[in-house]
Image (cartoon, rainbow, N blue to C red; front, side, top):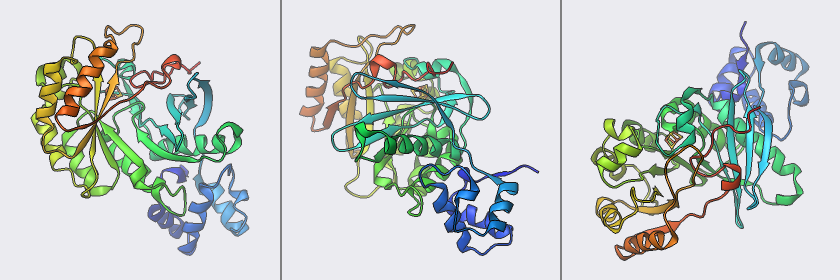
Length: 348
Ligand code: SF4
């Protein structure tokens, strides 16, 4: 009989499973809490469970977080973790330590089917969706490492972004389960305000995400006209800008919350003043912030980073139009951990 993987079950479903084994409901909360304590590897370590239940769980259920298979550290403090999954696949997650917080950028798929032209993950093609447990497992493993490492001791993992490998909204059910697990108070207890899901523009799922969770939405825009966006991001053929921006306008969010638009600046492609003015016009009336990401050059891809003056003028044009605009410094580029550079270089 196949064992039930407990790492992919949000608390209510884990409780249902335990009840199906003939044990009282409260045991569900107990087992769930144990799973998310640091360094638990065996049911026998769940010391307040009756021995009989420990045995039944060992026979009928399993929990195994993905193993960290490689670690690479950037000069700027960014750390890239490679994970080996049970089927032998590899994924990567990136830890970005900052003064106030530690952000983990997690993957949602092995590879990606979206084929964005500027992205190394896209060039790998799509292998499979991650289970909810494999998504949460990246957080669990890095959290455990942080507990051990003196360098960043005292500052826990407190910010999560779904901007690693894969398109999270293309793995929607597992994404929502993973978020449910992450925010459960009796487990990892993340705040939904500290979780951001980024999409390249899977329009029908945007509204659903807003209805099913309260996480932040980030949209990889990268162009303000359909011709340029189609060239960079094939998804735009299916869901053109007008549809995407309309979904953003209708995204259910509390009053002071804003959508984050990500815009990779690529030399000669989308970095002109006219591009900035068009962007300002298109985003009008959407509560938002704009992140400008000067392109991280990757071997084998034809795009270049614009010079600093061009980046500066682009930012100022958007400022003048009244937007909050940040130029996000590139973190981890020397270890291929920056945006669009994850391609499992850590895999043996
Ligand atoms: Fe996929 Fe994101 Fe890369 Fe596009 S940018 S190919 S959605 S991982």
